Image 1 (cartoon, rainbow, N blue to C red):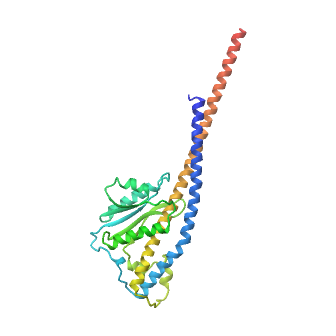
Image 2 (spheres, helix red, strand yellow):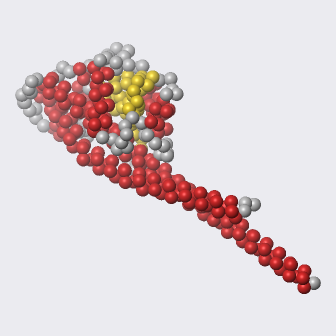
Image 3 (cartoon, one colour):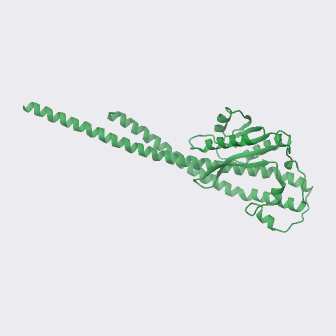
Length: 297
């Protein structure tokens, strides 16, 4: 049976771990609120860009732009942007992204990975898929400048013909408890989807309006090409922020579960400590009584 000293050491270690998990839970909660607030503050601006692009397509007709170009033969390369975290202790957050990215790579042509996050870099270098670039940023909260850097790189590779298609895989937060990997096609643009939208999309208000006649200077193509990089930046930025919020939610849940387990283990150790201590006291009393009886005899 374990002695009292060993049990006290284990209880002290568990208590210290419990302090860490509680602290990480509180930190993740604060970061989650900040991330969701940041996304809500910037979303209207990028929604307006999307609506403006839809208006331009509807009023000017078909726009000739390299952003609609693509390899129709399907023999080109597909860039897959995988958004992971820089830190662990987030439950199955990163593992779910790994599995989803591998599934995407199996169904696209000649996948080439563009990684965001150190955890993804450590994992995908051991896979058979080529890693072209790894974006590592110092700040924990995604910024617009970081999204713009990624967007500029993706656009340059697409326009140079390195990729015929670019997709981004990230974690979508349906709710605090439902976090699932999702993917979006970044390039090329689909003119039919952008000009004819579903009722629940960001373009629904535009679709219901009558066509507006605008004069685009220098040309509809020039205006569209000026808006397109901002649209791609907004799309990537939205995915980064949502992935960040999902990561914090996953870590918060993982730390909450770890704290509960630590409490359970601590309670069991306390019961064991009480049992061992009571046994030791009973043994000492028995020895004293036995000694006293022997002296009296």
